Image (cartoon, rainbow, N blue to C red):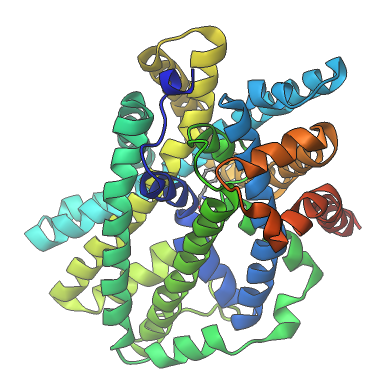
Length: 449
Ligand code: PHE
């Protein structure tokens, strides 16, 4: 049965796909810009702590539910529940997850479209098409809509090819390319004047900024977003994982790659900001605050590239290319959960499911674009800051309290016969049962107060 649904063909393929999902705009844009404005290394520490005590355990919860059920989130949450009520609630939560994944994709496709447009804009600059370049990097409804559609088409194309030929094949190609491009950019930026000031800000902790209460909820949202948690993405990828793989190991590898790339992106973006400052670009507002996180990449970096002449257009091309790739390996993982659900529960063919769901998501993106000021920020906050952690909480409660303990432990042993001798075995089942729900609840309560 599992093989009819498709399966990742190797551990490498799974890691590339799951890490490809995790590594995205959240790592390369979100993490460095938040670190820059929230205490540098202190933010890094808070983030690492949350990744370790919260995100990794929740990732494991999603992977294990998916791998056990070898089914989409809606069916999987029903499978591990034994009472009618908990089955019904589980199915409901699964559906909410699909909806949230679709809304995340609807704004993600807009932002990823900007990345593609900026990438082509650099090409146009290199070729001397100045008017075209100005249109590509300028903010207009036409440009935004066009590139959102191009990006959605690319995402849909990969997903329609299925798990092995689509997700695995493309992630395994694009992720190494991403890493090489990023390393090249980091090395280049670190040789420029002013880069060391950026490194200093990144690596010297300012705890007063990082421990501000308002920040912890943001850091939690960022950690959930970065590891693609709480929307059934990791659950569905887990459902395509072979029973011969050890879950704690593959989950640990995915978490490690995700954190590693975020930290590496910090070595690119923070030094680049201070290089920009050294060449006369404003990176602080008149009140001395760092320029807004949301606009940093589209204001500061292009101005920096502009000061570098022809080399600047090339660096800019590489940078936005990197962002577009990172976004694509993530966006496919947002489309797969609703597609798998439509195939498995409603009998659609993969092609039909992909077309139908992509059209719905493109329509949501279009609505956001038409009401940009009102909807863009709202959709991001509602999905990432609230829905993802809350759904993550549901996954923990289902693994910790609803699923019978023997079933859970047996699934954990699958592919990992020696797991019983590890700390993971002793700590994790208890940790998802008590500690994760408490941390999530505490951060929410504190936020309400
Ligand atoms: N993890 C992705 C990023 O960092 C975003 C994402 C969220 C992907 C939810 C899938 C599901 O950009």
